[in-house]
Image (cartoon, rainbow, N blue to C red; front, top):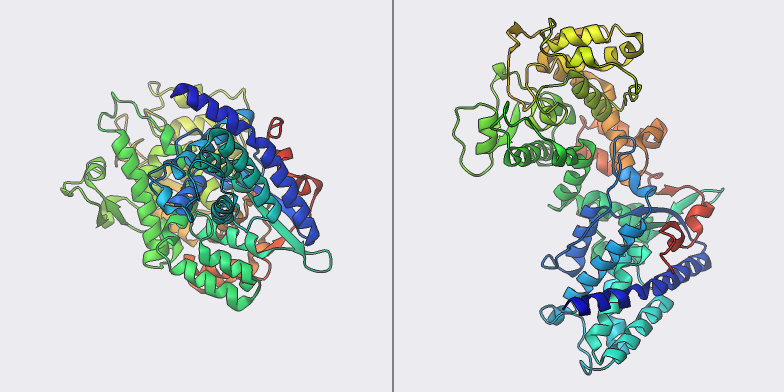
Length: 554
């Protein structure tokens, strides 16, 4: 079995040449129609997995290594436009492609293929072309050109003949599509739109809509709308947007966005001191993340509520493990249940949920600075500069000294002129959340001293999480930041580079609706400029393999 596996990977590596040929054909075909590649976005792990499930079926397993993304402008989605594939990543993608193609062409799955070969022991180019055209359209998110189909069929034919096995040849033809740049990257192509302006062509429009709304590849109906040119018309676009937004799958797309915006992916690295906090567990961490996503999706989609209420609501969803973390006497069943904290609970919006409080704290103690910096970055689009390398944090970290509360230690630390500007910016926010420890449990004392929850921001005084929540609820920077990050997420852009003019119309509709998420999404994607594109640059018009590792086409 090991020998066959190594042989499979060796043979599959030969298909890289075919991938390069396919990319060259694509570039040529696009040039013939005055279209050019204007941006490329590497699929995220979630997008890759959901695309495979939608194309081949949920039973197809995706097992392998995915290269990490980085956070740019507060979003991992922004890095997909600048990250390429390393040699290690390419090897992993090759193995993933082989594994998926092996499952799809295996005996268990063959009944789902669109045709049956004349003989299972020899090539059948007609059936091969039919299968590869069928799946290639979904993988590439557009129809394959004749040359692309021909290249893949030739590859399949040769391998089927040498191994006396039609499905072995089909496997490699399919794998060549799975590891090709046009699947691994979301290629956005544009056409001239007059006066040096460019606009995305229909298939790129379909792809952008689908990955925003459903976090997956366009379905058959959306591809058909692109093929007919419906997405270039206001009526046709509206019809598809309404369909995508009315689907339950909108929840999946919005969960992916909020998971990115709220940095919930960081939960995988959160750890707590097991001696100080024995009740903390991976189960509580997973539940805390789920709680926040359920809360956000319920407000944004189910009740179509005012997104400002995310900062003040006491409504949430809990299970038994979270109830214990919140120190609630209420005995929850195993299932998730809606719950509303009491007015005197100190809870106010998602900032006081376990997820946000635990993520932005130290393993053994809270951190007003980390919490304040996170709020400024995530909800107000005001990132805090990285502190200098030589900053002395000894005063802040000395919990056994004469300064009993973190407020006292931070004030002493902020006396340093180098540190003051940043700490004065973010610490008032974090200090108002000091009523909660590092795992999100409520407290009133620190080292035997009453915790002071007062804060002053921009001349406004308030106290505690409820005061902070109301401050953020009323701050127009919060809703502006949310709108900017949705826009940046959908386009793979750095949110810090998005000008207010880019979403002026969409933001106005968002505000007029009472800050409803559905209104923001709909007005944004139906805006005349949403599918505009920058003029092609040499980096994006070159063939796709050139942006991948140097050995992509060797």
